Length: 193
Image (cartoon, rainbow, N blue to C red; front, top):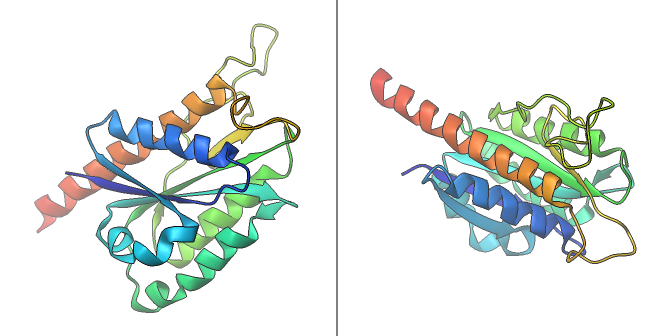
């Protein structure tokens, strides 16, 4: 069974809600998802090693990943030195309170982390939503990302109010896409062996 680890930080619960949506998307493919908050990552290095794919998630704080996620990324240098995640599938997601909020910078940092580990980055694979007179906030990919899944949650409201359903479904789409591609990679490796 394809294993997909979702390692994330959530400061206020919004990104955790997005991570759960990613997990739900992975589960749609009958793959095995595992949620790993970065605060618990030290207990899950073996799960990350055994995963076919790792999806990284962080809120966007000040145009960057959170400090907690950065600490996890820095700890992964031991894995990098041994090339332990090389050729795994990777993807990313982020959330901020602003519609833009410089979320693209966070996704670039997550993709760069994956690239340094020699991983294969999976894009969102959706056309932009909410970009025409017939579009709405209910469209998937309403924030128009390509590199990963983006979500927006109001700064003065808790996770019970956001991210909105379309952002969560966009995150689920990412999880489903990554699990499907990870399964394809695993099948190709078996054929090659």
